[in-house]
Image (tube, rainbow, N blue to C red):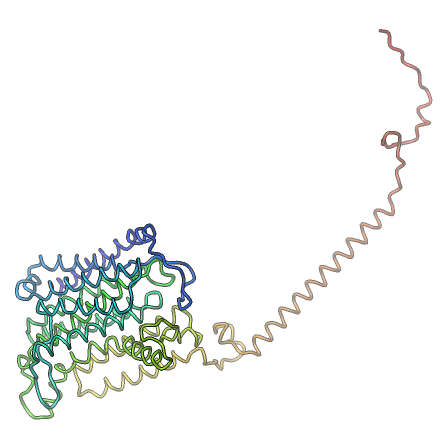
Length: 457
C-alpha cells in the first residue's frame, strides 16, 4: 500500500507542476479556442491540459517500475507497456484535436486503433463470468471486439461529461478511487497477482486527476481538452479490462458450498463487468441520452448541443460549483455503492443506506425548486434566492422608506442652505465700480489734501 500511495503522490505532483508551464505553452501555441454557444465559461481558456496528465502517467509508471514490490508487475505482465502505447496514441490524437480540430469519425477511428494496439500487446478480455453458466472463454475475435467496445464507450462517456470546470477530472478521480478499493481487495484479500496491474492503473489515474484538479476547478485556468479526457477514459477502461479479462474466477474459490452461497460468493466476480459502467454511470447515461436525443431530432450523434446533464442542472437554477458537486455526489454514490455491495451483498444495511443517500441526492437536485418555510425572523439566515416573497417585499419597503426619508432630509437641508445664502446676499450692499474696473473702498472726498508731485529729470 505504501508503494501505491507513493506512486499516486509522485503522479499527482508531476501533473500539478507541469500544468502551469503547459498552460503558458498552450497560450503561445494558440490553443485557446473561441467561446462557443454551448460553452459555459465566459472567458477564453487554454486547452492542452492532457499534456501535463500524460507526463504524470509516464512519471507514475517510471517510479512504479523501480520499486521493490511493484516492479514485479512489469516483469510478469506486459499490460503496463500496452497501456502506455495506447495512451500515447490517444493522447497524440487529442493534442491534434485541441490545436487543429479533428473530425468526429477520425477520432472514433483513432480510439479503435488505440484499443487495438493494447489488444495486440495482451491487454484484452479473455473470459467473462455469466450468471447461471459460469466462466465463458472468448475467442480472440470476441475478446477483441468486446475490449474495443468497452474502451470506446468509456472514452466517449468521459469526453461527453467534460463540460464544466473540474467535472470530468473529479468524477474520474472518484471512479478510480472506488476501482482502486475493489482491485486492491481482489489482489490483497484473495492473493491474486493478476489484479496488481489494475490496482496500479487506478492509483496512477487518481494521481493524474488530483494533480490537475487545482488548476481546473471553477474558475478554471486551463482545460484538459480531448487530450486529457480521452486519456483518462482510456486508463480507466484499461484497468477494468485488466481485472475482468485476466483474473480467473476459479482462483477465488467462490463456487464451493450451497447454491445460494455460491450466488452471493460470485458477486465479486460479476462486479468487474458492471463496475466499469457503474463508476461512470452518470457520464454513460449522459452519453446514451445525448445519442438518443440527437438521433430523434435528426442530428448526428456527434453534433454538439446544450442538452447534457450538467447543462440541465444549470438551467434548473444550480450554480456552477453546486452542479459539479451534485455530479460528484451521484458518481460517488453509484461507484462506492457497487463496491460496498460486492464486499457484502447479503447486507440489507448497505441497500438501505444507498436508498437513503439517493433520497438526499434527489432533494439536492430539486433544491432550486424548494422554498424554505422558515419564520420571518430567520429569513436572514437563508440565502437570498430562498427567502420568502413577503420578507423580500418588506425589506424592499423598508429600504424605500429609508431612501425617501434620506431624500426628504437632504432637500430640507438644501432649502435651508439656500435661504441662508439669500439672506446674506440681501444684507450686502452693492459696491460701486471705479474707473478701469477698480472698486471704491470708501469715499474719495476724504483725500482732500493733495499736492502735485513733480519729478525732475
